Image (spheres, rainbow, N blue to C red):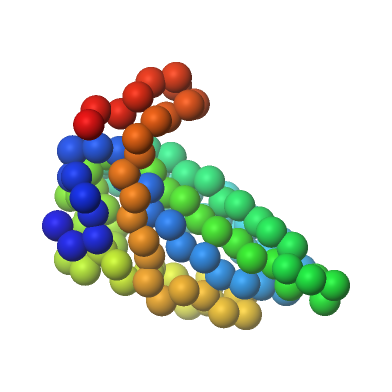
Length: 120
């Protein structure tokens, strides 16, 4: 499958954006209160992180979302046939200064949260 090395392992889908201080706060609330409940309804969704990094004195912030998926089919159910296309709803876009138009995918080799090594 395009964008993934092994569909049988846990896969992390990564996407980044930049936001003003206000936009970063608004997007963090959107991620927690709107997006995560929707994702939790999808079979194969296995969790998520939203990370932030301050980029400079003007308060611009980088936000990076990492969503965890149990299969390529689960990612396709969320993203569509071309899993590299970022899914950013207009409501979320309005909170951001800029955002990646593509998402990347990486297979998990070691999951330290549960202390187990992924097959492979």
